[in-house]
Length: 259
Image (cartoon, rainbow, N blue to C red; front, side):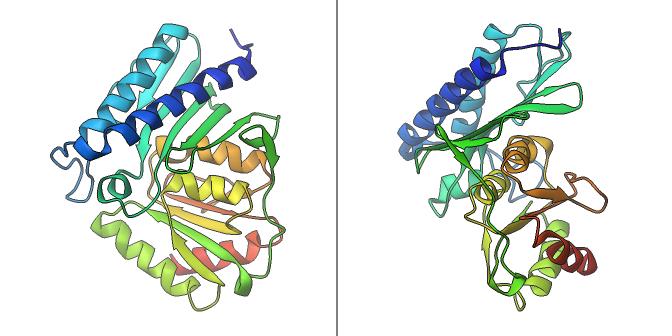
């Protein structure tokens, strides 16, 4: 089955993302932090796990033949050719420490192509979404990338996994960009991408992410006119560079030279 009502699916998963975000807000004062995962800064809470279970259970009920890739381990294989890619809480460190934004991210792929994406910011009450070929939305309103100012006036988002090796790479990028750009903001990867989609950031760099960190945000950004790439012509989990079209070549050259 290659055809699906993607508009209806978007409504369903946008509602799921909002429900997960509401759970996160309600349980923030009572959350419990578990043992680190891949490294000491890779934290997870019981709220991450509960949020993922809420989303995955509903997706499996609605689309039982679809595969699921989910950050906290509630994935399973499927037979339909469709795959849901889920990060129930992108920005857990911000969420736990109350020092910045986080989001709920859900993407739907058919084979290797992203077809649907939702990123919900619980604290701001904002839901970004896109359907492949249908443009990007914030709530029900279309959004577009910034006009792409020169790098010296551009606001650039930076996202990276906080393991020692990636922090070394991120330091090189920040060192290369900070003296020559308008300013830098560190934000979780999904919000980095959707803020570019909404024109709040003029460009962004994400290093050593996982697919669930960027899958939803990347489709929304592209549908809003953001140019995405990495070491080659396409973005990757190792390196994602995004920017408004006029800015992208300059930003990409600076980032690639730094790495």
